[in-house]
Image 1: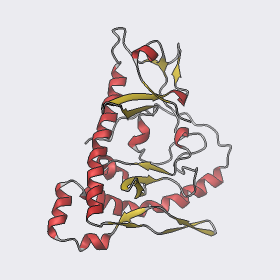
Image 2 (image 1 turned 90 degrees about the vertical axis):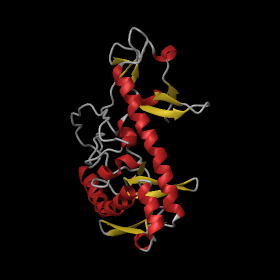
Image 3 (image 1 turned 30 degrees about the horizontal axis):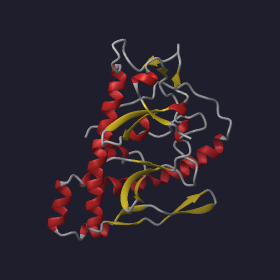
Image 4 (image 1 turned 60 degrees about the vertical axis):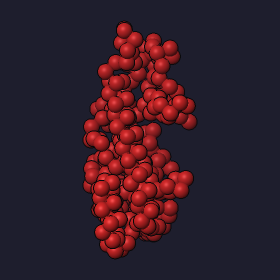
Length: 254
């Protein structure tokens, strides 16, 4: 289980951290949340739908066909796709709302990436300030948070104008057909029938990249059965492959 703790000088001033080199932590995720700023890039590489969370729709990358298996992560922890959701790229760091409404930079203490040294990098400078890479992490997560708020507003408008509908899916996996439930999609017929005024409201709110990106990304569903076959053929004993540094703050501009 994750153990998300605030990153503080008192607790982490003498500790060090290792950069993540594996996406094994995401190996059981069937969906990953997306924010508006990354939709144009994600739509070219991942299936995208919506899910309901506390009554609100949330855009998600669809990563698997069965609970507990992320088809985009192989048995060595390597990411198999061309785009990695921003939600994963700053691991093991997270930005968590504080009790006073502020955003608190936290780290997953159970990640195995926090050490007492001597391996790894410091969190703080000798002057007790965050090192540059930690400041970069915080800025990156701040951009994700800002885009998430815009995304919530946009999704609210999509629901307001009744542009979200259930997405009934049946995917062929080998000799069997698998039903995929719980996903939502843009109702393209309702979109095409939308009067000018609400359409302009969506455009002015920046919703159109999400609308058309989700419709475009539906064609990427064919990746999932292909990846499922690749997992089955690879088996459980794949040889680990060398990986570079995967702490990646690129590709997200609000």
